[in-house]
Image 1: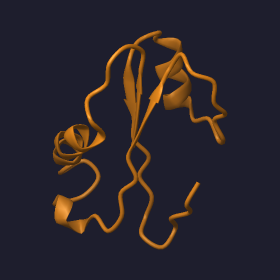
Image 2: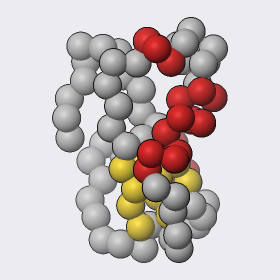
Image 3: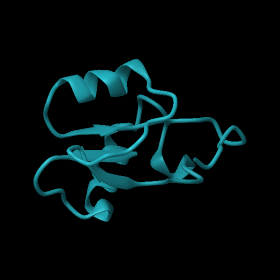
Length: 81
């Protein structure tokens, strides 16, 4: 999960739980099924490289507003980036 922001972003620990709860019933039955989580925040006006740009992330950048990108992978298919 990466929070892309322009001005001020909440602490990363404050954005995790509401998003994990919102994914219940969509991605998993209960958030107790989560085994790993990586959370980042990046200033959208900063300079950085994006590997494997998904359509959803590209749409987020094109909105010209703060956004959160969530990537879900099955356990065992997780690669640290």
